[in-house]
Image (cartoon, rainbow, N blue to C red; front, side, top):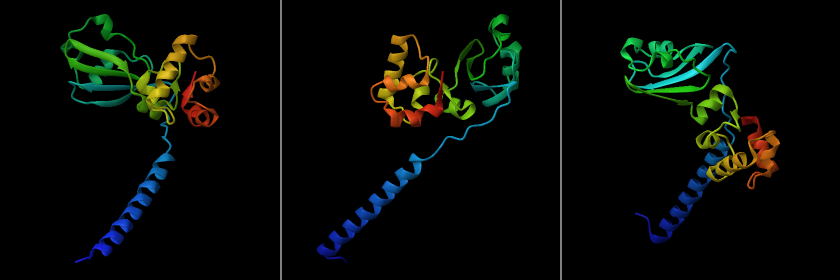
Length: 182
């Protein structure tokens, strides 16, 4: 087998190779850009999940109501035990519908990364913590600082206000600015 000196040299060689692979791997993922999907103006994107036949992201025409979305996901509206006025509620672009039971439907917004993919930008004045985390250059600390700034200043008037937040300098702002909007 190998003597002690040969084992040391082999171990050093393996460490050098692994560190260069990890370093190059990090550089590869640092430069990845999120591809944005084009959605026609007259369409909305809605995610449906939970106790349904067909889960996924669906494209509907503007003005589509909750009952029509549920039918598309494989649930007949007469099986749903929620008020008629809720079933006739018009869905907004970026809505997420989670069917827990026939009488329990949770309506929220798409997660941050899905918003970036489908819409290209996240609204600084509406984004929640997780949506902000999907933006390259924003980690947990900066996301909290953005939310605090927004609350303390009544929202953002310009994207450039991000520079006022500690931790977002000009360099980080340039990385963030194309992913956010007012």
